[in-house]
Amino acid sequence: MEARTCPNCGYKYSVAEYLKKPFLKGIYSQWHCTSCRTNLTSVEKRRWYLSFIGVFPVVLTPYIAEWLLSAGFSTAISWTGAIFILAFWTFFIFSFEKFELAQSNRVGIGESSKEPIQGD
Ligand SMILES: [Zn+2]
Image 1: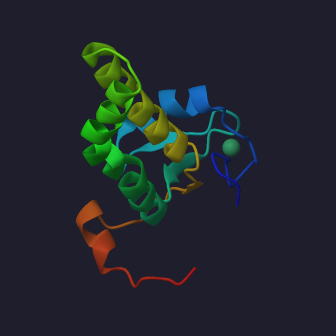
Image 2: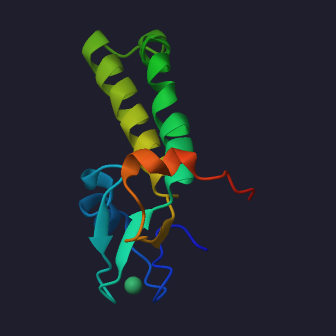
C-alpha cells in the first residue's frame, strides 16, 4: 500500500489534492475518491503516528530561531524562518499518510479504540 493512494483504484493523490481533501477534514473524516468515488478514510493508527512526528518538533521552535539568529538573521526573520521550517516539516511528514476503504459499518468513533490492535 503506497502513501496517498486509493486502495480501490490505485489513484495516487498529489500533495495539493491531499491537502485539499483529507488533510483539512479531520482525523475521522471520510471522502470520496476523486477517481472511483469510493468512500475512503485515513489509516487511523498511521495518522496518529505521523501527527506525533510531524507536530512534536514544534517544541524546538525557539532553538531553531536561536540558531538562525546566531547565523546573523534578524529576530523577525529567524522566528518566521523557524515557523516556516516546522510547517514544511509537518506537511512533509503528512505526505506519507495512507488511505483505506471506509468501513461504513463501523459502530461509532468511540468504539474504534476497543478494536484489537493488529500487528503490522
Ligand atoms: Zn479510487
